[in-house]
Amino acid sequence: MNRKLDTAAVEPLPPHAPPAPRVPPPADDEATAHWQRNLCVCVFGSFTTIVAMTLLLPFLPLYVEQLGVKDHAAIVQWSGAAFGATFFSAALVAPLWGRLADQYGRKLMLIRSSLGMAVAMSLIGMAHSAWQLVALRLLAGLLGGYASGSMILVATQTPKERSGWALGVLSSGIMAGNLVGPLVGGFLPPLIGIRATFWAAGAAIFVAFLATLFLIREAPVRKRGGQASKQGAWAQVHDKAPSIAMLATGLLLMLANMSIEPIITVYVAQLTKPQNVTMVAGFVMSGAALGSVISSSRLGKLADRVGHWNVIIGCLAVSAVLLIPQAFVTASWQLIVLRFLMGIALGGLLPCIASVIRHNVPAGVAGAILGYSVSSQYAGQVAGPLLGGFVGGHVGMRAVFLGTSVLLALGAVANWRMKVSRGEARAAR
Image (cartoon, rainbow, N blue to C red; front, side, top):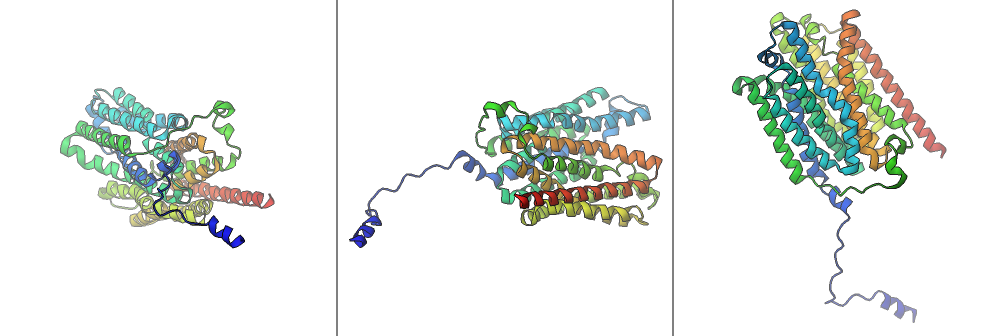
């Protein structure tokens, strides 16, 4: 009797029974299914916009002179103001764009950024005075933020077990933009002219805008209601220590990258022949970026396996060690190799910083907190050259390398203590 009942319970459906209706996947799952395509578009768009922001480095003084500035000191001052304007304004608005991305969608912010950058870059090619150039560079920073917006989209949409690798690939695209931008700015203006170079950059960003508009998929943003929507982003992060640690680590990353910028040409002049100074200085500056391009995705993938905190601590410690021999090199090739190796070490920091923040904050405020992280990195880009120039001029160039080494070592120790304390807290629960 029982056997008959059991048999009836598992009796198969008739052979001609209609199949069960297919339930469509939730919107979040559908968007997550396209994370690889979204990643490709974000890498292309980030690379394009970073190239556009940095390509004017080789010819910026020439453009300022074309705009009517003749005094040498004034050319230098206007060039510095024009170059720094974009990063200054971008640092101010990065948290705002991150917060708006949380509220209205990350894809919408990428569309806004790419279209705004395309217009701003085209207008820079139409400037008629130095103050217009500075104002338009400020506008580019205000409207931009594609790379940081891509970081937010990839960090929040990629499966957590693949986030380190995906953010590493995106970081490689960003670093490649920093590497290729000055190279493009070196050979393109003699071929088509300075103004046409800006228009070409604007056209390339417009292509990124079209790719973003038609190819990126994102789930509809759920509006947050109640008390949570009235609170600030930080108020909704219960454990703020990891995020604060990552803000400081991002600052250290850019400070370490940029601290030798003001002294590099003078330092290289002590190591090589006068006629080779600018060429060797260019190789030294590109070495770190090239190393980061190569290592970012690999270290991000490693972090997915061994833990993001472990990779951060290791990268900071190795970079601190590599800075010490840079202060005592006797040949230019030694400095190039050491900067390349340091770039390999630093390449793991950017994806791991974003991953740690993503894993330790609510999804609804991830954009805003990652925006603060971007601002801290821009602050490092500003503080690094200022600190390096001051120390190099008043203490000595070797002190720049040794001082930066101490800061990175302290960062490694602080992150190690943070990791240990969090492990002890979890064990005590």
